[in-house]
Image (cartoon, rainbow, N blue to C red; front, top):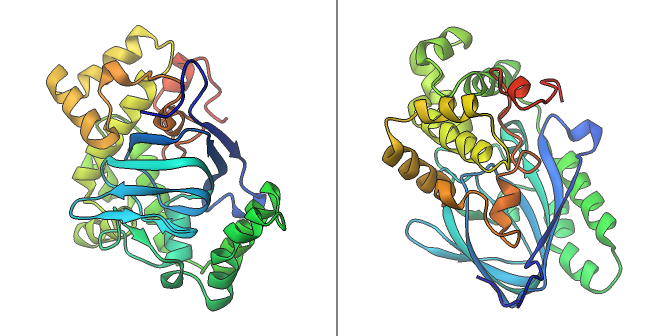
Length: 304
């Protein structure tokens, strides 16, 4: 829903590559703009975000509360789709943190900090809080341009990152590789890959991803399927592989709706939907959505 008429797009998403030194921690930087008076939609299950909301305001609908945006805030990782509304015109600058980035920047266990907004003072040092909280006003006054805001946000991340233990990095990276290996990866294969006992592995996966390995499979299977089904052209073999990963059509629809807020029929929505960009390969970078032979079927280079 938007306040625009005709074919005018209700938003634009500009994705910017992360600075090279921050690539291990970020999916991307981005600028989101909307001239619409109002947008209502659903965010898919997504990684943590650092957001400077410099124009307009919004509401995010969580399990038991509705949270209002402020000039600067963090969105904790979402483990299921959540509704939102925005009063515009609106402009938002974002840093999309991958799971390494969330752990190294915030130190907050995801199983206790998900599906909520988090104030900057819970995450950043005093200097970082002052700088981050002041970015919106500096942009509005013309002191900072778009690049200046993103450069400042990158600098704040850079100055607040902590070094993660090597074994914790191993858990994050090998779990993501495991999730990318198949629509239905084997649980015992994950435990074989990790340098911990089964119980410790389960605890650490929940700490870094917010859910048990079993539920994590459900989540990424649905998001991966939704992303691939949203592509304008999909090989029949790959579409069949997706459908075989679910019990039946009803199960496919239920899971995709729960984790993305969409149904298969709505996975190629109107260009005005922010979710269309977020579910695209450029916006959703945590898991290799084109692994397990999918890259070749789609005519992509698996190393891209």
